[in-house]
Image (cartoon, rainbow, N blue to C red; front, side, top):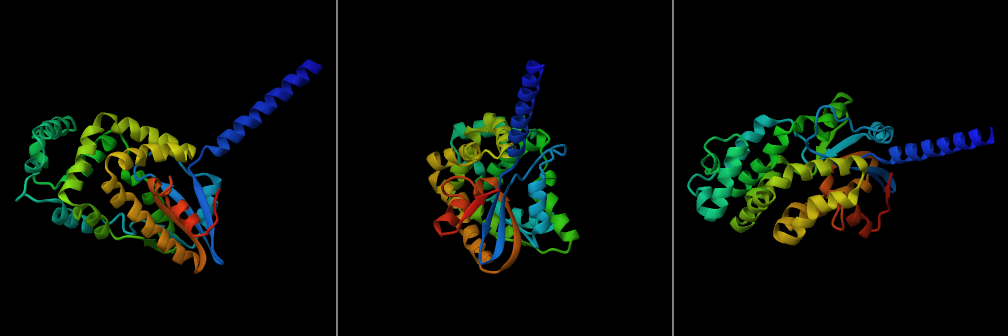
Length: 292
């Protein structure tokens, strides 16, 4: 009997440990408080599979308590107004993509374009500016693997807040975001495309690793996947896409913290991790940022 009791106690202890580990394995959520305001910070993934639920009681409670939602861009579902902007800022047929790349890069681009279902290969992308070609190559294998932007965090949250008549706002506009890419120097744009060409074979595997790390709330791994190589190999690109935007997000969040009410902020997970992440920037300004 004593041996049976010991075994039962051991099994209960193991069950408790597994339960605790399971409870911790959820996407990261932070909370920051001002004198009369509370801001939740949630790192989103912009594309998920339809059968990948990510909500938890803790996240649901923060959403329910929040009177407004702040995203990177508020009108994420307005594809009709986005398409003309992409054509305007992303195409440059007078200066074909092939004139800006080395022969080796053109051959690599042609190979990859054909592998993702573009029969004409590089010629299909030739009217594009380098930044748009880079974005296209970054998105296509992920979508082919079944990850859908319309299953992403933002597309889930926005209708929920709309239905509850809670405001949905944005730190940036779609036009501002596109200008971040379109206004880069030719060199930085080509660097961006080169990074996609270099990492293409590992991009889908890295994205899956990113999703796993996101589900586990593993900030260090997310920072490694999303930012480390960009910081080291393409520092100008890192400053443009990560650092400067994070500074803008943090500045606007400080304004929210000086107001009243509870706000749920959902921006790309890469903006919340690492030494240049929004939580770190807010801490440097004297705010206490607590991991939930």
